[in-house]
Length: 450
Image 1: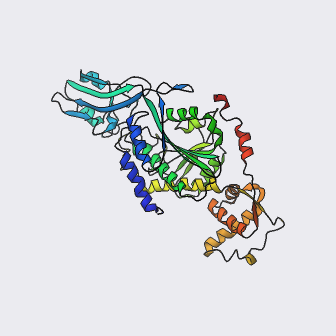
Image 2: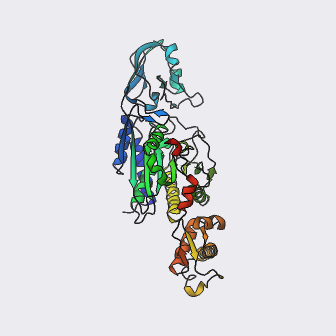
Image 3: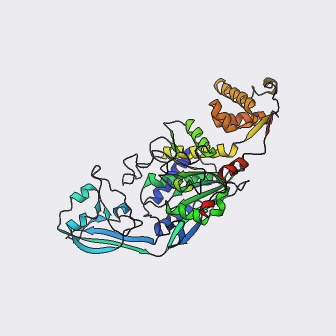
């Protein structure tokens, strides 16, 4: 059964709602449970990498798990309760259980004074510490002289866990999609990216023909991508295009951050799709700060991987707070993000070069029935112009994306025109697709990291 936009919107929100209560971090049972839920919808392979494993300049950290945490007043009432909101505990907090004066407790409290009812999200991954995140209102209400504090957590040798889904195509060349699974109850960052990735992968499995193979990574941020790259150096040459998916459910327009290469096909495809997608969308240049694209685009790797989001991290007040909840993400925005990813995939799949079999003046289209194959007047005019552009620039040097960019028409209009002209015997598809140029640009990918 083919999913409708309405049913997919419900499925996207449904998956986010299912994953929302789980306490995730860069390691631990929360990540495993998240991957188990994903595996109910997508047959991912789950990988475990032991603590202490060297991955380039990093080391896989000890595994962190938490069972409970609270702050109790002198009456024994929980005034801060991890069971009510898993953001209350600083991620990777070491275990603690003691009574302490309010002056000492306040040294371990984090608040958001400008948003008195919101709870911040804080981490302490690579240094041993502990803390609680509370609303400013909760902090002001702490009136007792002493409080009992408990963080029932463990930090011990274990594993880093990530999920991977590989879908083979006609070619061994790959398109990589990567999304992070390390945040607790935060919906836009990044349950939205997880949901869009899952349903994009499921859609790809329904295609009768796939030019590329596809790889989806569900990984903890930073250390996850570094670990995957360190373990898969021999596979990097196959990756032709890639996208990091994050923050795709908020009200803002789509934002694409270019890869380090800047002019790769994925950069052009994403920019083209955003140009022809409704909304105040934006393309930004690469900077070495952000999500996992900065690892995929590190100089020794230099993959053509960009990042697709809506309003970027840190540019909306709800970012890394309890306000990034189920009310913050919108089903229509998630569906729009999915459709943008779908359109980008279609550009990558159909990008090709053709040669016109009639180079000496344009062929007569009317007697071939091409005009009569068109729809209404507006659509007919667009299709007529698309055919003329394709015929004029199908010289073996210009690809369909080249033609779409130069003409200002959508890639889909150019693609449909190409199909019509090819069916009438007016175009011949070239067999080469630029792989040699790609390899020359990248050289020995990852050689400096070997």
